Image (cartoon, rainbow, N blue to C red; front, side, top):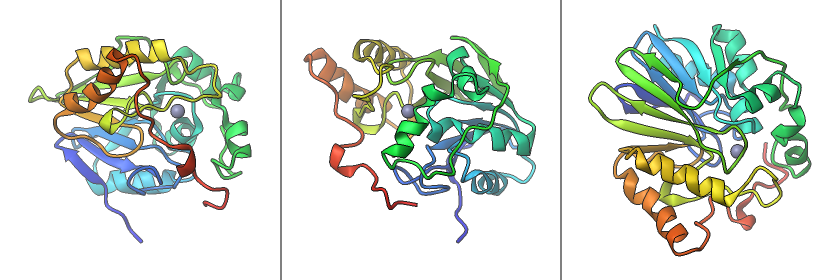
Length: 262
Ligand SMILES: [Zn+2]
């Protein structure tokens, strides 16, 4: 069955995503956003690698002429990062990541992806793997341009080390926050109880930083893209933090994927 990408704005399309979202590509894929001007394109996140053909087909459905020149990997978890190698090989795109994430992509710190533990927990099929890949290291505040759209990379840790969010400012002034696994629709969080990289105080600082940019849209790494009123979604998390309680979680323990998922 052919899928069609979801057009979110003149410059942004959702071209991949799995069971926690639109089922546009492999079930284990995070949301993959295309930022484009009809000719050049940047992908934000890369999926797990098993859905790369579907992702590229969706890019072509947005525009036959679009050439992917860059892939920004928000963090090193396999559902966002493991597909960077196959997508980069197919397109020639440069892969951008922070230093800790680049180390995972290059194969020198693969254990930090958490992939083996996640496979053992039944979260990924056995075929998901990292192929060594050289990434260009980026830093907080770096920018990219796609036509009249500017992308600003923000270091937003708290879910995982080296985590980036991307502020996408379109020519009309609209700002979208692509937040990876930092924060989701309705202010939800992905705080990993068994990860040393999850840190609530750093998470809070990162969410407040994204909120300070006053994005119009919230385009998270899983679940629903928020196309208006992003502030009211971020406010749910901020209100919880102000009250000294944890924000609501993206996944309850009883809705985790079962081992028999593909
Ligand atoms: Zn993650």
